[in-house]
Structure formats: C-alpha cells, structure tokens
Image (cartoon, rainbow, N blue to C red; front, side, top):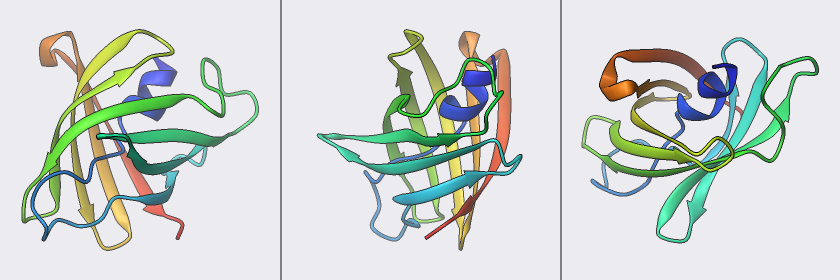
Length: 123
C-alpha cells in the first residue's frame, strides 16, 4: 500500500492533452517528505520515476517507475490511467497542478479505494 502512495498517486502526471494545462514535467517532492520523483515523457507515455526514497520507507525504492496515460484539460487537471510494472497493478489517476503545487489521487478496485497526495515542484 505504501508503494501505491508514492507512485500511483503522483500521481504524477501526463503531458498529453490541452496546451493550456500546467506542465507536470520536472522534479517533485511528496508532501510527507518520504519520496521524490521525476516526471518526463517516456515514448508515447509519461513516466514518474522515483529518484529518492527516505530510508526505512517499506515497499518503495529509487528507480521504480509509474507509466501513465493521461489527458490534460485547460484548467490544469489531468485524468487517465497508470500502470505500475513493479507491482503489476493499474490505477485510475487524477492530478491537479497549480503553480508549484500538485495534488494527485490514485484509485484501485474500481474506485473503491482512493488516496490523495500533495506534491511540491523542486525545479
């Protein structure tokens, strides 16, 4: 479940869609200070890669990748799906970017279990 919080709730995170949406590419720190990710294009998709995980954080490691297929709207919101190949799990995700902040929400089990996470842009 901890891995779900880091990678799946990034939420972080696509570039496809409307041109007015806020850019989600870059480096982000999770609000609880336990993880950092880099969000960038990877082929036709967007990938969020763990670049740092606080020691002692179970079930997560640097290098874990979340592959996302998301679309953006003009309000800075993204929605779509994400696949976590390390855990062979798929998620529904939504992301809201405003200035240097991002909120991600990942859902599993058909939307029955969802978790939101806040992020701060590092660059």
